[in-house]
Image (cartoon, rainbow, N blue to C red; front, side, top):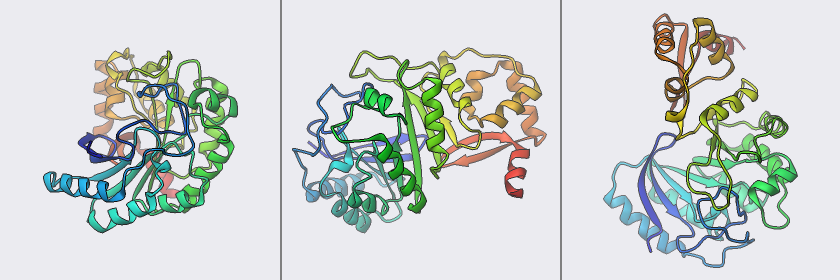
Length: 312
């Protein structure tokens, strides 16, 4: 079984070639309610380990076949930072990747390990999950291995964000009735205000989950996004835009909405009716709305916000 998959065309990260550090079986220190893999007890260590040499050989073959790659994404059927040879792997990736970026998708649980922490600093991009900020909700949604504490995870992410020189992304996956309460969002908001990152991606279940839980609608995700501090770089990641119901927005409504939360073109198509979309286009032409980019994602915000930030 090859350790390489893709290329995958991602709106968030570009053209990605994936490395699966646990290709044959699920190995994770979480057993998340929403996981697309079958339920499995959380574990502290990988029991089946793929040699670095095998991964590098597979990757070189894939790079020979696919010349246009933006990012090499390190992931796993489980948690990639549990891979015991991660430092060696990343060092070898750096010798063959040329201008391609390296990215890891992690649940953040191992970031308190000094070796993992220092290793992730060597990457170009890092995406860390943070599904909860309180102990009870963390244990309910992520079902972590014994000894993993959310307070330590948040402290580690915060410290990492202050030292990391690459692009850091935070991802929150919301499950209906679990981590979408006002209290939990408030706790998440408080934690995120201390974390310096490129973008905060919020999403929900879009594939069959391991357990009998439900995702949120686009409207519910949008309302949740409005509960976060306006200065946080929130991005709604949803495959359910088409199921959203549209509303009418005046010019002032549009500018106020974008002031509280910058929106993408997909968000605007989902939220605005035909007349509101025309008003949006007029405001854009008049220069009252400006587009900004956050790592491959275009957002729209009132132009006065850009001027205000420049003045700080």
